[in-house]
Length: 114
Image (cartoon, rainbow, N blue to C red; front, side, top):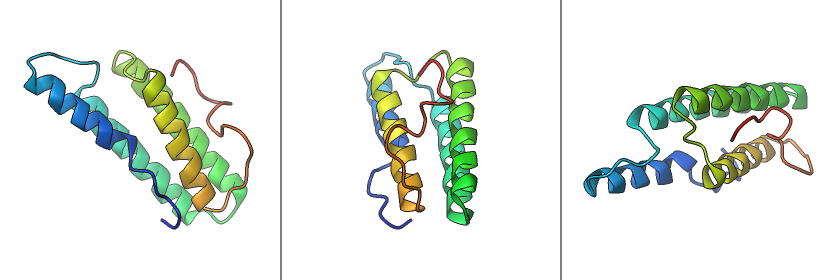
């Protein structure tokens, strides 16, 4: 995607998960939560790449954010401050790369406990 320079948040999450596992501990990430997050981001990127209007980009943003709301509950609130900031920035930058112009946080309207 044009102008999308941020790595997926799940890249860092997977690195953290692997480090926690290697140290014998268990962090707040799980393989399943990361996998489901990647699927959600894939769907989001696919939707905004095909979008032909700002309204369709906004629909994709809403679907991604509400999807992360559900994942966060399903996987015991794994999205904390750092993860929220990474996701919000990634979703925003992808939307901008798809042509959306918006000042502010595009995730804020639908985001719940993350």
